[in-house]
Length: 331
Image: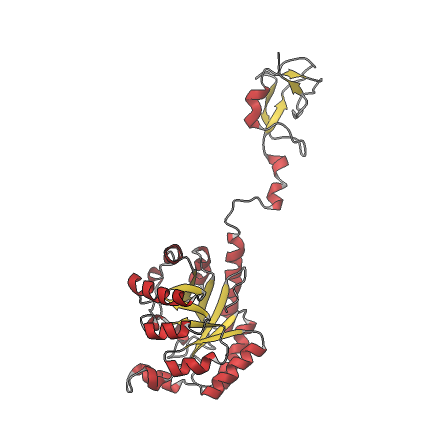
């Protein structure tokens, strides 16, 4: 099961940016971990079982395949260095052997969401399900979520825009509020935009998980390099996401300690305008509401009407804060 911390969970989407080079993949796992990623995600796709030969998708994924032994080694390596790892699978045989590697979750990509037999099969393994909604209608999301819920899996539903790159006006980060309210599950953001602004903002929109593509060289042609962050940029994104989470704070309206300590110096209280003798009544002329001398808490302004016409129980100097015991009701 995916470990969800009291923070935003950040996934470095390596996908097939290793281009079929297992040592490059290993180095990318290292750098993703060093950049602050909680998890790395691969795409373990058997091109012959997923794409028609001769198509562009077939050519790209065939070229970028890692063998079963190589994939096993990458899973073991990530687990050894303490990084969560999982992958996207599009066919039953591949998912069966990948499950033996103990992935921390399954990712249902936007292109697989309507493949209900596959969604059901992945859910049957009982792992956390990350469901991307980049090309889905509400009815299609309803069906996929329902299938997973039948298995009792934990679910995170991702807002995603299946454009590469996705322009700012297409991101619809506010959709995460809708998804959370409609389905009652955690929501995340799978980011295909350029840069890290959307990832930062998605935290305020409710994202508990962020997936961002990762590469050595974002200027490299092909694969997903163009929408990916290089290690230094990914590290900066992680810092910004953590800052966003820190700035959001808690849902309840609370007063932080340093602000609470300012109350005694700032909030108004009832103060004498002149010397008041014992037995003399409080009036609009001899008391008013002012910011107090440091540390001199007193009667709050909301009780001003209760103090008027009361009798002083002691002699009180000018500019003195009125406190409980300084007055009694005039009978």
